[in-house]
Length: 499
Image (cartoon, rainbow, N blue to C red):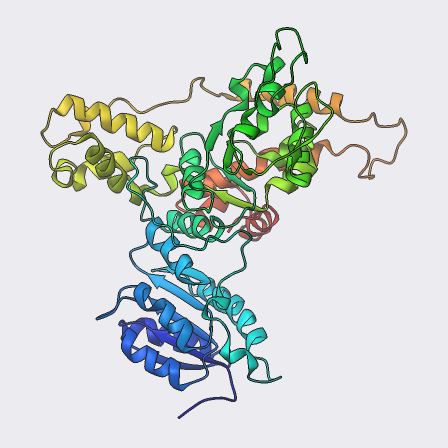
């Protein structure tokens, strides 16, 4: 029977439980659901019915979901396709998006996440097949792809890089999905995360999967450059611009023409350089030091930081308008201690990269349990160094916990006295950066000073996040540890954008 009077969703998955789950979810929202256990069966349904959305598993008996994906788009007249997989990696995510998928879910996924992804895809589909006629049904199959400026005309694949992103956790699947969705655009991306989480690897992967992949990629840490020559290094200079400038010199932005620049630790960029960077982002132009003639700039800008730039804006050390321009897309990398299921995968990856014999046997479950109990303050970088150290000690035999160096600890122990001193120093800096409060002002007024709110915004998120991590995300236990009511914790989590 051909269904034409309602929204029809096609679910193609060889797991009956997945099909049943989507049937219950989508029928509950008033949609009709058709299911198939193979690509071949699904294509017949797509050709015989007006389909508004396709949910397609990657691994199917017979033809794979990725190979069949363009056929589903063509058979359905351009219906959006959501890819689902239990074997997510960056390669799969990028390939799915390049083949035309509008989104990507990794099993196991939360029901509410799947529902929201389906709603977004259906909004796109409703615009395509509204009841003003059938003209859109003969659309270009590629029309279901998400709009991205500068989309490459040919597919890209993940090469076998030694420093490839590795992880099977849900947190890393989210990162892979974000990279796949943003890579083909020219949007600026802010990559955040603690030191050692792999921010540079994410930036390199974005460039590698972009249409700029054959052009230069430069990773720059402005904090490592001489402050007096920073603008010259970034934007170049003309002859005579300053003492010693005997000839014109290209800066990084001109050297990387057509390519990508990563500005690492962007939070340390001086305010004067921030103004020029803002001009690059807004006007696509820069001016070399000593010149008055701007030059066109065709460079994609990625930025990385371990700092909270919102706090830097509040402290007047980072421009708010620059923050908005940099955060067209934000990718947040999770610390290793929150994705301990990736430790074994990462450790074996590092051993393979070293050419260590039998990596799968070299690390057993008992060792993984020991390693998972460490805090890994240095994140993946610390784990890599620890595995390489252990491999040298073990000399080819299976690794033991005794082969590993002692866990990294913070450089300076923090006690209540030192914490009080830091708070005092922060408060004095905040007072000096704010306008003075007029004597006799209203104590309940929110202006001009908001020291207390600024302090809470700078400290409370880290306190709550750390306690939640320590309790494995158990909100009841976290509320008890913090000494606050669970409703209060929920309100704070909502305020600070916690999931």
